[in-house]
Image (cartoon, rainbow over all chains, first blue to last red; front, side, top):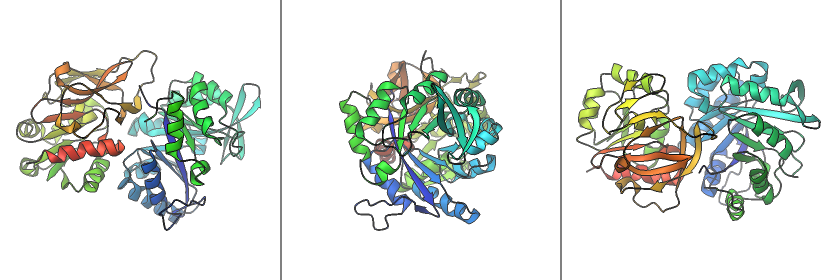
Length: 251
Length: 201
């Protein structure tokens, strides 16, 4: 059986990890390559780099980070942020990413999903979604880091992106994000029921049991967290050991 | 020197990165003489079976590879593994390299997500030098929608995904095929590549 994946996410700006990290033995705590190596050692099943650089120059530095990481870390790398067209996808994959994650740009131009899937294969096109609850069992899709409500129904969007050839969905709950109260179980259930592609749960992880709960109660195949791992509140290893104890299959 | 066959298929850099990391001398190449002089060969691949075989054919390397597979360690990865078989049925029927008996067709897994993507556990079936040093609890990374259908005798390890999916195949002589990506399978994958490098005499 497939193992459930635990995925740490690193936010990178101008070649540095943005959230302060303090791994033992790492001199420059903000070095993304070293952080990725540390997560790899802890047993991360995949690593996500998110580019929050605004400038063109910053993009080059960011891709250098991906390139260097791909020489040292031998698990799948997903790269998101700042991907606007097929050329950006190509450039990112060439730098050593195995998958790209598109979010706002996919909402503005859904054909990007289809073009990307047709050229590079569905397996490397992950669509990131930021969504917020508006009523019982009803959510809408936001863009620009959760700042702009597009008024698009989440479930309609999920069905559309699957049809366009997305290989995976990374579903972030704006309501749960930052609360540390656990993943958004209702929203994840609704999305997993609406599609047949893998869904990564994102936003809300605060306790070790949140990971076991999301796998027990929803069809999510992976769980992602950033600050929880950044601030060493938990290690990937601890999360996996706990999940294993709860009967969840992990690597 | 390991020749990594560069015939236009993607994902060759991660294979190269992993070999570099392990200190195994390697070169991306489509040059016949270089391949003939190499100590071992890796055939990578991502994409669809018929188009990859066409690309390989256009480099004029099909016969060279068939010949060299009799003489030195030869490892196919992912689609490169599938191309070791006699026939593929992805979109249309296409000839493979025919180095291992069997065919490649859709994964049949009712109710399961296709592609089979993620970390799955290796279940060992027959001895294979590439499995040296592994425990009985090893996971490797898969991404594929088609799989090999072959005799159990050719399967060194499989994984469970509704049915048995061949993960590592071996002809008992020089030819090895990994359906998973050893270059993306963490420590386990690196050990398998290291074992392959160790076959070089």
